[in-house]
Amino acid sequence: MFAEAKLVEASTEKKDKKPSEGLGAALALAKIMLYGDEGLPPKPQEIEQLGEELVTHDALAAVLAVLGDVKFEARKDFVTVFNNVLRREKNGKPVTVEYIVAHQAILDALVDGLDDQDIAFSCGAILRECLRYEEVGKIILLGPRFYEFFQFVQCPQFDVASDAFLTLKEVLTKHKQLVATFLETNYVEFFDHYGKLLHSENYVTKRQSLKLLGELLLDRANFNIMTRYISDKENLKLMMNLLRATSKNIQYEAFHVFKVFVANPNKPEPILKILQKNKEKLAKFLVAFHTDRAKDDEQFAEEKNFLLQQINAL
Image (cartoon, rainbow, N blue to C red):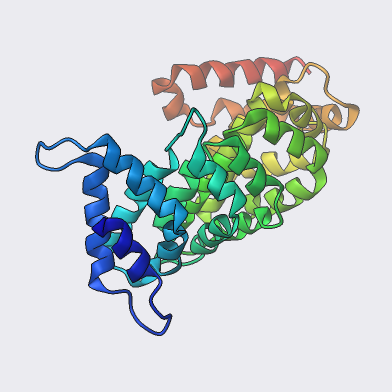
């Protein structure tokens, strides 16, 4: 078939040559074969054959290797084709996922792509689709390259950093029990890296990291991690400082982490002492804290009042 043959041929040309226009045409045709065109539905037999050929001839890896050299529309088509073929099953088994797990160079290439602004969005979209499968999530989370994601999310280019953060979030939230076990086992190393994100000069990184931290701590699967985190007085001090950040959005996200410290019914002595010492200042601060938002956000208003009650009762 033209699409499979051309994908393999064009994507494996010598490295000193640009991929031919045929690669873009082949990707467009492959997309049509998978989804149909102008009212013509796709043919199941062609879909199966295309998926089989792309995997058998390592065409997915080959195209990925030259993805930065093809046009934008061709990259979009490749994402569509890759993610469709990824979902292919045979006899109830995710055969493409099994192929990727057995050929981890593909995952390495996708991770490399997150640091290449030309293909970062394409690689991020594919990697997030791959991360839907726990086998892939385990490879990324437990592999030697996991902490590279903490560098990618600090890219100075806003949209690239945001996209990389979406991928990091997928790693840390998709497979909850896997992540909970990882965080318990690697608590110190993980939060050493994560703390750098919370101290980042990059506004986007800091805000998104705070928001994700709140989600992680409030997830039932991470109860033990939450308990350990809110027992550390340095973490409390950090959140109290972030409550006074110049950005209102940073303040708001810090509030949702700070409230976990205050709401804890079994506060360790160091945490309790800090809160008691700053009781009057905190109460006064919270009364004036984001009053405009409290008028429009009933849940936030209730949470703020609850914290005030807790602090006044210290």
